[in-house]
Image (cartoon, rainbow, N blue to C red):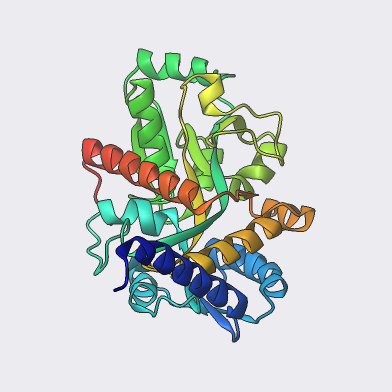
Length: 323
């Protein structure tokens, strides 16, 4: 008779041997990384920076497959329905996983349950800028002005439901102020009108406004990330300047379908972290105003959940709808 006291250790040993076998064999062919946006955009550029450097570390070609459309839902669905074998991965952004689900976009998958987190790749914060005519030199001074005259200050965004819009709304909610939102069709016209003085405040990606900042046509007060950024270390964060805990960044992470084997996750996570600590990737991402992240799969899962919940509250409270 087979004793049950030997059954569990035997099963655990078998599982361990199976995981080791998977880890040793993976990958034995090209890996596809689905980018749910068209080629040439910020997500695509960051994905190519990352995968180009990841490929030699895993010993296989990585094919970037752009599947844009429906706010990232098309690419997300392809990844969610793919076999959980490590050969079909998703390069996801916060707009796809944290923001769009709250803006009425109905996806045929659960953003918190349909994917296996692997590694957080990077963040790209906004910069809080104002027109030079605004007398504020600090975030605290801007809040004082906004509180004194509700909706007297107008802030520009790249459009309703975009990160620049939501960052402005998050700022207003946390600061207890009311500012008039003026949406534009993209970052360029928003910058142009702010420089012209037609609006007073702009939350924008660093590369979008860096030239105007250097020329003195826009005054930078802070960055919206959790920590200062390498390309502008002189700028404080909104959190340290005035609003403790404030953070708003576009972020990217590498995911697989739900049920991705732990051995595959560990191998990709280890390789990804090796990429993200190199000076090469830091310089490449800095060109797009981004900084590498790294960390464990569990850390990515926790960060994603908190970010998802944060934007859900902001969007619900403000009654924001996508265009």
